Length: 277
Image (cartoon, rainbow, N blue to C red; front, side, top):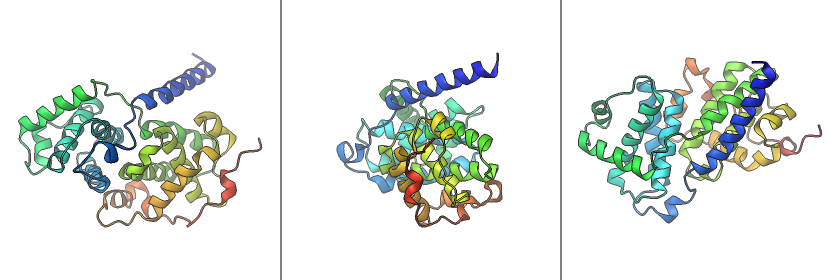
């Protein structure tokens, strides 16, 4: 099979994922519309804890994004009280691990990470409720799934520090998980915006978007403006002592210390203008 054929298949897969993400996305207003007892900051604290657990158990990055997708989709249609929010999260983690991991932790381990707050039976009952609520549709294109493709495009076409770009784009995309308001943006748009912002932070004098990225992502620079600014704001204010996990994770050597990178306080307006070519 020639490279031309592979490129066509990759393009078709990407277009399919873009259609699929619309069907597998949570609503962006479930806190206001459905939930009575939980709020956006409780959700953020829960996800911050998952980042820590995922590091401890060395879970795949995709698992973390699937956990959040399942939580948000469940909360989009089911009222959950705050005492059961962590139970929902642990059951979502168990489902995502079974789906994504080669060797998923056992239900006992999931009970253990909550200091045995929940019995095994409770976790299994919640797992069943989630699977039924989501109609067993566990495949979902997450921002991580799109980001992997976009980072490869940048690495192949730009003079940018390869590993730093990958780690920084991942860090920004994980930060987006904490922010409930980012649900207004589709996963592919978040991934494209994280790629744009990571390039900007590493090469602040160079226009981050180009015709190659526009071609592969199907987004123009102007499409990204609002989401990039939202991610930029998260990046500039990511010192929240209540949500330390992502900053601590990406301050490690294995992630190239990218959380310590200087983030310029503003992005030139012309970087969002359309490309002339």
